[in-house]
Image 1: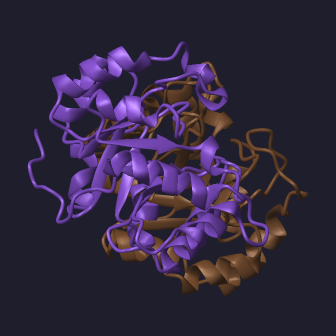
Image 2 (image 1 turned 180 degrees about the horizontal axis):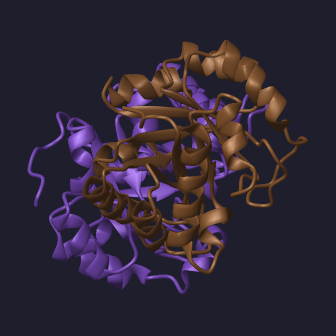
Length: 207
Length: 215
């Protein structure tokens, strides 16, 4: 099940060891770890997925695997996160069954509604603010689009893209159930502290 | 963990690998070639298109699956068990740096799992991990495999064939001229990538390969 709102999702960064990032993020209070590494081999991804899943059990987080439905199934991870160019969610659902979580990236209301129809459990919505973590072919959506989309969608939304300690809480106010970050945790001197501060920022504003 | 369950019918002895140059436009060379395979001639076919994202790879695999292929043909995809499951393929071919067959077999108990190997050592590891067959090479010099270093040669192929009970497909610069040499060393079958890209010669090449493996 998706964690209670508000929560922090940390996506691993190609430049650092995903297991190290995951453990620090979980210690800092992250509720979801998404293992995302586009250049790793299958065996490497599999062993990271197994290790991060174990850490997630220990710290009561969820381990979600980007793109690779097979790796998620084989490693015992909690679910997958699918981009618009990955396997469609309805097909992934048939392979994964009802218990595993499926998240889908969307950057418009249409994509989000389609994912909802296809049986997704949450929507990763963005990018909200400018970001350098991933190459984007379109301008940032901004908090207003997030708010409008959240109002029309029954699925929980995880806001992504350029999120930091200053803007995170406002996105929860816009209707996001959680926020996802890459660099705001991994590219800091103290990933654990960065995660902890993000978690306390979204919880403080929310309560 | 040795996987002892034998396939229902013997594996075909000719092994085709897709070009790695498929895109999402119109009819592709893979689909065109699959339609050309003579009805009596069954093959192993591996869809190996690492440049495609999962959505496009799935679309291609589904289209390939729709083609009425000769009985006994095994349609496989490189590495992605999820794509194989979603497109109801017959198996998965695992590169040397992907998961081991025993890690993936629980997801697809009835599928064929083959492994690429480039040394005796990795062949024996693949056998212990439950591979159903091995793809060994490059045997001869070939442009597409030059990055894997110098060719293994016929001697190494012979050594490996004597060291394992698994079916071994020889790959890398195999032609109608030298294919018989691989069979003489104990190869179960012969595999090709570049040689099958010439659509005009495709059927002719297949028939020549078939002649070699059935001799």
